Every structure is written in structure tokens, then in C-alpha cells.
Image (cartoon, rainbow, N blue to C red):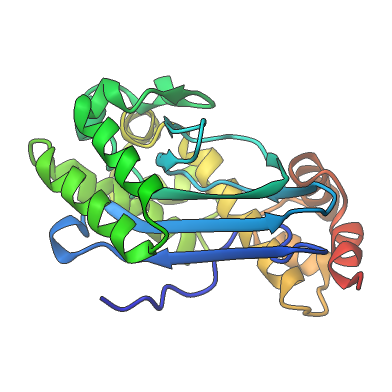
Length: 268
């Protein structure tokens, strides 16, 4: 399986100031490509060093995370996720495609928004076996193998709506011209209300939230690339009415203005 998945978006500080931080992603097998976006692994080593804060902007996806003492299935996190890293540890995760956790869950995924779920509630005792296998290995390939075995052993009934909703979300991420729910509804042939119900059931957040999140991901990617950004022009390209509304949303989510965020990336 190829491991070229491009650069991850949403990690606000790709490198820690000191210590070691690794982030790796692996694709699923063809048998699970309709359900899994990718598998991910992060590790850090800050032994004898100060704790450091890591921040991410989650995507509209459910994650099954295995980490010592923190293993759970996590619904979509709507705000900036802040985590203080210390000592030495690691985590392995299954990132489900947008909408793809619904067949496992069997209920509106909006019920998991900003919440977590015990993995045993979905996978029974297989979840305990999976956690032990992941924590036993240092090799990411072995972790991926354990994840594939877990999912293939617990495949839900096929749901054709998963492919449809996953494609919609992927189009939002890729197409910068989608800046409103009305535009998306027209493209997919649904009413605005039907689209909102569809996202509530399968994704767990509203289509407006997904559109706004991916437009801000685009802005952050441009800042991280070191590009000279014309903020007013970018705000209009991303569908904002004016520069002030863009700055407001950026500051609310990131905790600082675009210019101030750019300065933090330039610090040695």
C-alpha cells in the first residue's frame, strides 16, 4: 500500500519547539477504502523537557483512538483541539471517512458531537483485543494490520449513502467555489433542509460547519506554506462577505489573528 497521503491539514504547529514529534499516516486496504480515510500514528518524546502544547483543527470525521489511558471513539470536535504533550508516549487512530461511522453506530452521528464513546459499545470484546495489540507493538504496520482485522471482522451492513455523503464532503474540501449550503444543495440536487438532515444523520455536524471549516483549513495551509497572503482577497475567495468577518472567524477558531498566527510559525 502506498503511504503518500500528502501533508496533513489542521495541525497548527507541525513541529514542536524542542523534543521529538512524529506524525505518520497509512492508507486502508481496498476492502476498507469506502469506510476508512486513513490510519494515523503520532509519537512524542519530551523526557526531561517542558510539556508543550499541540493544537489541531479536527476534520468532520469520527476517530477511533488507542492511547494509554485514553482509548475511545471520538465524535467530531467542533472547536480547536488543544492537548498538552509531556513525557514520552504515542497514539494510533482510525480516521473514518466522513459519514462512514454511521453504519457502525446505527444512530445520528450528531449525538457524538464533542463527545466520546467507549469502543466496547461498538466492537464488544474485540475492542479490548485490538487495544492490547496496538499497545503491544512499536511497528505502525502491525498496528494497521490489527485495525484492519478489527474492522473486517465487524463490517456493518452496506449502506450506499456512505459513499454519497463521503463524496459530498470530499468535494467541499477540494472545491473552493463551494462557499454556501445553497451552492452545495444545488450541486447535489437536495433541498437545503434535506441536506442538513443528511449531514446530521451521517456526518454529525451541519454542512455550513463543514464548508466553513474547510475554507479556514485552506487559509491556514496558505499561511503555513509561507505565502504572502492578501487577506482581503483571500476572504472574498473563501466566500466571506468582507475581511472583518473572515478575521473574526479565524480568531475565534485559532485563538489569534491570521497575521499573529503567521508570526508564531516564523519563530525559531
